[in-house]
Amino acid sequence: MQRSPDAVMLFAAGFGTRMRELTRDKPKPMIEVAGRPLIAHALELAQAIHPARIAANLHYKPEPLKAYLEPENVLLSLENPDILDTGGGLRHALPLLGDGPVFTMNTDAIWKGPNPLHLAQEAWDPDRMDALLVCVPLDRAVGRTGGGDFSTDAEGRISRGGDLVYGGVQILKTERLHQVEDKVFSLNILWNQMAAAGRLFALEYPGRWCDVGHPEGITLAEDLITADDV
Figure 1: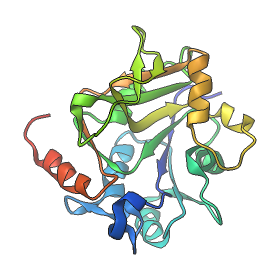
Figure 2 (figure 1 turned 120 degrees about the horizontal axis):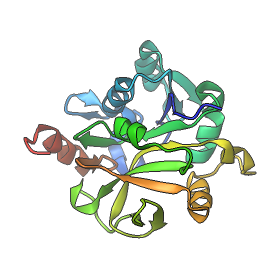
Figure 3 (figure 1 turned 180 degrees about the horizontal axis):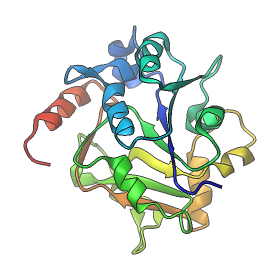
Figure 4 (figure 1 turned 45 degrees about the horizontal axis):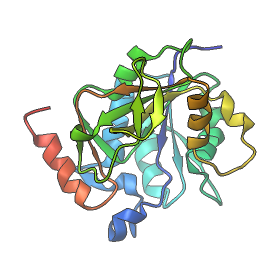
């Protein structure tokens, strides 16, 4: 079985409810930040590592995303009639992605610094890891309110709670997806299993990051893009 990831899954199916009126007539990944749709910022990072395949899942108002992604040779996984959440959506897209480990990437964040997919690719160790999550320290997570998601031990293994924020990029082995009986489920189910087995790891991102999940995040992200410092 293939050991290194050569496919990227872009999560683009969500409703974007926190964006309020901005997603009334378009999906959240098509909201513009610094003159480009959010999905363009994510796709640029994905294309830069030259994967064999890039796929995206679509559900809410899919037509603008289809029109944008098809000319970029992105494979499309339409979730219909129901949205499948991250785990169900990834499993639904596996015929497009292949059997090996895959990158997954949220499409509502801006990264300032090295390409997080490349960093994860360099740090990936399938002998020890079932998943590697790129995480951002709270003091470099622009606009983050509340605490972090994870902490790590000396070897990088993850536990819940702490000052690391999951940035939305990971490498994940997909075999456990087939063991989940539910059609709609979160990847948190797999993460919990991997953490219990000591095979869930984090990579600390050295740059800065901004979640664009709410309208205020657009200005914060644009300021981050134009900032001189990393």
